[in-house]
Image 1: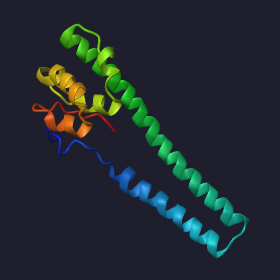
Image 2 (image 1 turned 30 degrees about the vertical axis):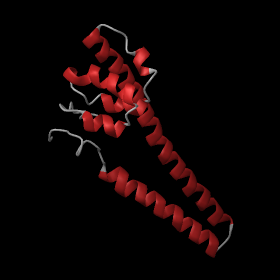
Image 3 (image 1 turned 120 degrees about the vertical axis):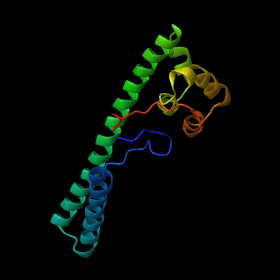
Image 4 (image 1 turned 180 degrees about the vertical axis):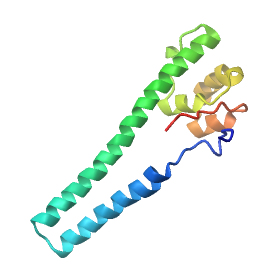
Length: 142
């Protein structure tokens, strides 16, 4: 696996992001067209089914991302405490989860200072990632 950095850290899974989501969208659009062309009980059912499938696909990803965010928050609490001996929660309350996720890519040498700068300057997650000099890759995030 190549070394991670700002430019290559987003992960796209072909089967999910391109094939799965595109297929689900095409099926949903097709059921709407079919409903308009031939309004009957079967086409109504298929349209509701396709819509439900898309909602489920959205929530499956949303729940997985939410769980990963909780794990990252716990990881950052532990990591910050190891580096400083101080609890992370007072800083955490001043940051969004997206900022915390961005900060986790910072190396040990720059993490504490970058947290302070991110809070003081209200940096966006993108700005935080761009400010990282020594990128610490996350090769397990899905």
